[in-house]
Structure formats: structure tokens, C-alpha cells
Image (cartoon, rainbow, N blue to C red; front, side):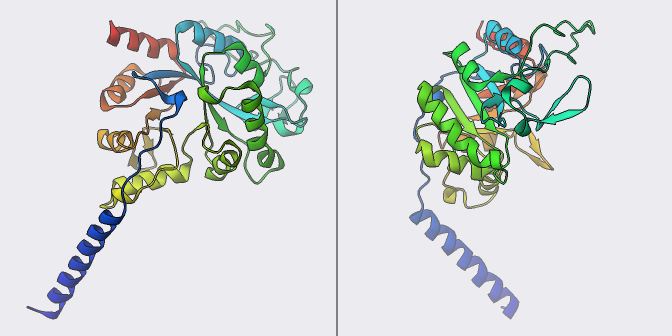
Length: 302
């Protein structure tokens, strides 16, 4: 036996021993149940209220989606200059005449002056919502208008900004004041923001996964060290693909499900993909077309 062969065998043996030792010492821990995630069937979350059926983030969109029978909403939040939490995705709000305005630099009253329905075209290419009073929505208003809906909240303000440093505590205080702990999921693309929020929540609220947490989960799944993954999230919301990596495989969904972590996919707007994901074990569909998604679930349960 040559020297190189002996070295290769020794390395393989050491790797096997490390794997066996780590598996003996590390037991995967399932995430504890959270009330907000206790459902025995797949759910439909209207993305920004259903941005292809009405102006996104408008009260009309949320009401229309609720009327269709969705289980909840997937929304983004930002902090205004006067420290109000509004339901909005972009950093800037489009002005109808003179450029753009940054959400964090404007007061709630200034933001309420903008017409959310100004640019929305329906299927007939008509501006049916223009000048109909569609204004920016407070998170408080959304909670109060829909007291039984699950609301998945994504904190959009970057943790490096002033508004980003405040929004985790502001959000927690609102959740605590309204007593909505059991019907929200709180997340952010920034894992740091989720950690900041949880300093206040102390695991009393369901947490979504940031980008780094998703990366860790997928890396563990594709390695021989799945047992070393210790999740810090209660639910994972992901696209079907990230860069060149497919995230929609049945094996990955099952890996997370075994840890009591349901998987929700965004933003899915065609029936074929919805059906495929549900058959693979997805527990949630986040969509701009809640009308299609709800009809799919009705047909499956008929």
C-alpha cells in the first residue's frame, strides 16, 4: 500500500470518526410549537394584500383578499419620520407629480396624502382605484381591521439606519399592546433584526428565517452533518430558487418539516407551481394572486 493511499485512508477514517462523534453528541432539536403556526392544512397568504388584484398594500387589496378566503397576509413594514409603523415595501413612495419621497423622511400625514391607487391598472387597463381614497395603511389599522388573520411581517428598514434600529422595539410594543402574539410571524432579510426583535419577544412570537439562517439550513441539508443544524426559526419563507440553488426540493422541505419548521414559498402566481409545491409538502403559498391560490385549495378539498 502506497503512502498516498495510507494518508487517504487515514483522512477518511478520521472524517468518519468525526461524523460519528458529532452525531452521538448532537441531537437535532425540533422547534417548539407556536400558536400562529398551528394549522393542519396548507395556507394562502396574500402578498402585500394581493398586488395583482388591487393596489398593493392598500386597504382595498387586504379586504378583497380576505373576502376571497385567504388565511392571512404577507406584508412589509417601515418606520416613518414620526415613528409610526406603516405597511409598505419600498424605501421610497412614488409621488404622482414631483419625484419620490423616502418613507423614513416623511411623516404619516405627509404619506397619507399619496394615492396608492394612482398607478394600478386592472385587467381592462383601467385606473379603477385612482382618486378613490387609497392611502398608506398603518400596521395598527391592519391588525384592528382583520382581528383573525395571520400576518407575516417583514421588517424592511436596514439595521444600520436610525429607523432600522428602532423598528424591532416599536413592533414589539405594538404587538404587546394589541395582544396579537399568536397571530403574527416576524421576520427580516437581516438576521440581526430578527435577533433584535427577539430580545424583546423572548420567543413568545413565531419567527421567520433571515437570509443567513436559510443559508445555514440549506448547507446543513446538502452536507453529511444535518444533525448539527440547530434552527433558530419557526417558519421558513423562501423562493423556489436562490441563485443557482433550488430550494423547492421535497427532501429539503421534509428536512425542515422534521424539525417542526413549515416552509412557505414566495411569490407564486401560477397554479402549476402552486400545486407542485403543495404536493412536495409546502405548508404555505405567498401570492399576488390569492384568487387563483384559494380556488386551487377549494378544488383540492372538494
